[in-house]
Image (tube, rainbow, N blue to C red; front, side, top):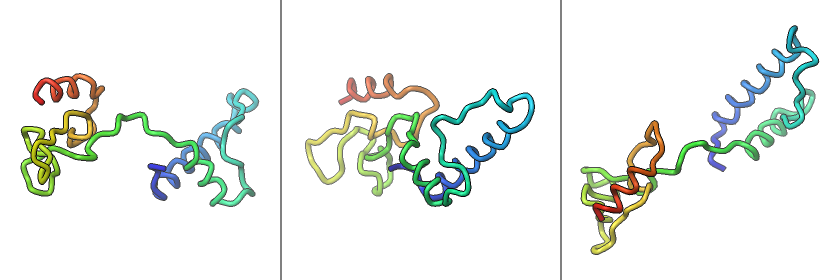
Length: 114
């Protein structure tokens, strides 16, 4: 799973905060936690496991073969994979950082350039 221990703990804090809000007026009785981590006294670890099993990213995966000028980047500015002559990376893995918008248009530009 992509969720780190710190992420899971922070997400659980958020769930517990919302759960506490749901016990106040005017939300009391209007909010139903059908799919939520087990409430205390369930162990923190069981609640964190629930978070890890359900947490998903809303972002596209990018940067797994990030493009950059420095030698530590596996892809150069021409989309060539360093150390593998003739191999060109023309997908979202070459995008060095997660953009604010969708990656589709960037991938199309990479494909045209490749």
